[in-house]
Image (cartoon, rainbow, N blue to C red; front, top):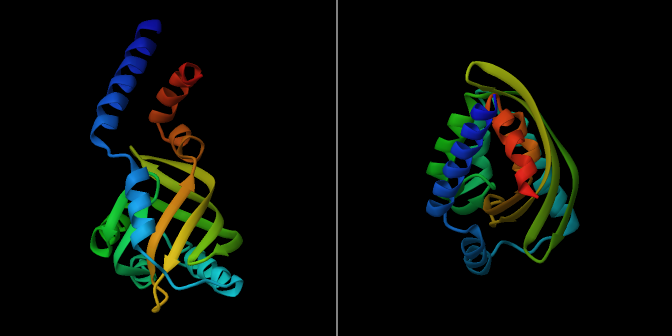
Length: 188
């Protein structure tokens, strides 16, 4: 058992190091996009409306209508970083959503609060869903905040998500969650 644990931790650590090398830091991309992409100035009512549209669309995740709802929510040219992926056009984003849609069901997204600053709405949300991977279904849940800018057509042109994938995703994944829990003591 100790050998398998060491092998699993070593493999996961090696994979993490190799993966980190090929993934650019989002900080510079975020700074550039935040500086160059301007949305319409927000009010509290508009920020709340954005939050309602956002959570309403994502409540259809895992259903046939989600792709159409997401297509209406986002502009063609955009910046979106959802912590796990980054996109600069709607076509690639919708392709990503189509793949997600096949693995997710029983989605429940709640708007906790919405606020704004200049042209950004900050949407605080809760999301729970069933995720199917490796033939197993697991219920997952997380809290997060999305910084969103919209254009004059009320479409999202900028979205930066802030959520903790360690608690909301990694620990819950079949098989991988166990491997992740084995390396947590080394995180300190």
